[in-house]
Image 1 (cartoon, one colour):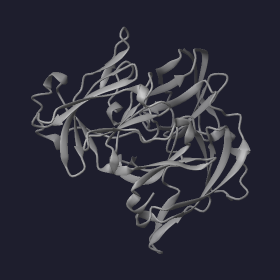
Image 2 (image 1 turned 60 degrees about the horizontal axis):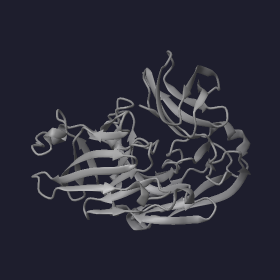
Image 3 (image 1 turned 45 degrees about the vertical axis):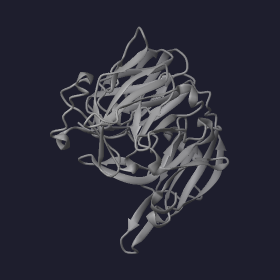
Image 4 (image 1 turned 180 degrees about the vertical axis):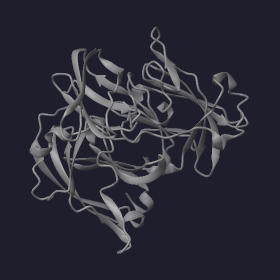
Length: 390
């Protein structure tokens, strides 16, 4: 990644590095595609986001930042690409937090204002104007209304990409990713929220692409572990590999990797790969080392009818919101929740239409802890980690 983690690196399990992008080159990332709505900020580039309280877009020209430090600060999800910082206050479809979906026009129209802090403590006001059939329009200006800009990012300009990127600092749209089908994991920096009080913490780690799932094997002999034992533990959380495969050894005053930990990655090419981290050199070089080997050929494929899924909020207290994307209509979608002993503690069946769906389920009285949610449409399965915290 380079000294001070200067670059994000895109990696394909079969083929190696397929791209890189300078971490400080962008501030906003807009999810592409007709049926997506997420917008991410670049926390690794010192970007912070605040939602303006007690106003709507009519307050654009008179926006007052008094009390900014007490405003609600927004962070990206580190579990799904469908839930960026701008989506964190969503109350559920058709409310996407930054805007509302119109069932007639099929346009999401922005109804909220934001203040974004760029590197160097530069503040701008920001309005996501609309998403219209995959095309994003947004507006930003200085707090004194100078430098007012309206920008449109056209979906057609970013064929086979997950995100279109934008630099407010340079006033430029950026095409930074390899094609979606050309990478499996991303070496990057991102914010995670640490328990018990959700303290934001910037970490260096690995996030996986849409459609890639990962199973963690912890406390094992990494050379002899059998991937077949983990077939039911693959999850679609983008940070399942994440950052905690390493730690700082205070006695040696250097980073070390967890010796009895490995991951199985179901990649977009339909194969399963085992990865074992062997080294992490920190900010001095940004070097990360791992051993990678082909484990088994998987039936998992990009032909799955379930594109992606996520749960929010996570941890869950009483109501579980499930968001999932289907390639085609399903009349028999099964949802089941299992404890760590493999016992089913909740199940439901539902129907859903092709595209992005959101459904809410009332959780039974369950003990606090980690659970595995299984989403099964009869032909494909997605597993999600769910934390119950009442």
